[in-house]
Image (tube, rainbow, N blue to C red; front, top):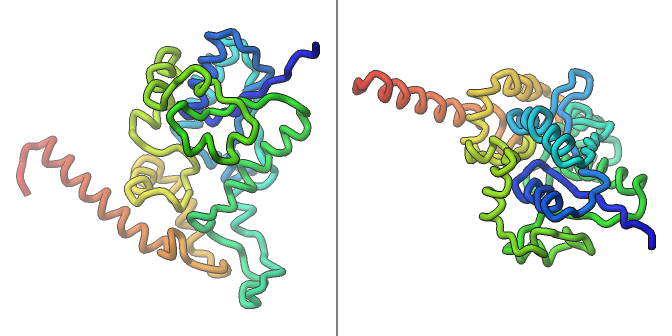
Length: 262
């Protein structure tokens, strides 16, 4: 009987990381752990992933998975990136006024970035890898996800072993495989994603001002289809809300530190 080739699809999140642990502890063979990294700018090697998360992936998680568990980790990246997609010139739009302009910001709720920059390189990887069993990180209590096309014949070891979402935290912590984004109670994903909350954008500007400046520079481009950065709101509008949050936090920090009232 031919040996089953098996690939685990990993995002670095708690569910897929816990899936790796379950496979390791139960001697489930894995030929490759594959992760798709979205890039903001290939030329300058700027990742589009949450900065704290992707640093942890490379410096902490991958060494544990490869050296301790013995599973090969493969990072795939699309040839395109956020900058290229932003500057793409539209030529065949049904809305004539858009033709000749740059595509600009990704639209929240229907982000083309997920399909082109994250899923496309994964589709290419699996096509080249060939027939295999795919393990996905879906927990035993995620009944709606189990009914979606995400499963589509794929395997979930979390479901098989009755592991719920809440249980994955301790499973990951056991091997230091819980992303630091969970400590901050922040979402993972791309730092430029329009689906982020204003609070998360405030955190980006406060902790990674150089990345915020990248977005600010793009916002000054007058050749894009729409200035709607986040669900119709312009970047300037979002930045004003971000500054209100950060200035308020600074005020509270001042009061907490000095004990003075304002």
